[in-house]
Length: 106
Image 1 (cartoon, rainbow, N blue to C red):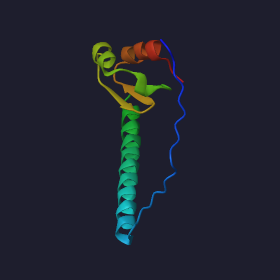
Image 2: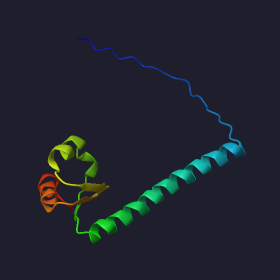
Image 3: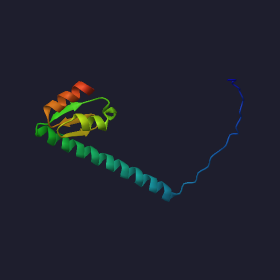
Image 4: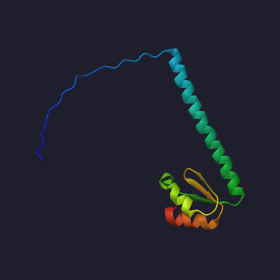
């Protein structure tokens, strides 16, 4: 296979955009709505975490929580569990121990 090297030149282009006050207000409103949703989810997670702690659930903290495949969870975890990002709560102590052995903990 023969490699061919070719020089390509492209013209510089300027991009222009026009924003109106309404557009800025729409963008600001969308950002505020998204931040409110994130804040509400964080508050809900804190409340649920406190409830699960008080009911004796077993908490496990992991670094890379999004690497844990759903199929592994469905196959391996026998009891109820909740995931709040890096914090996992297991109703069964044996599930918590198995989870730690497989995925580690901080």
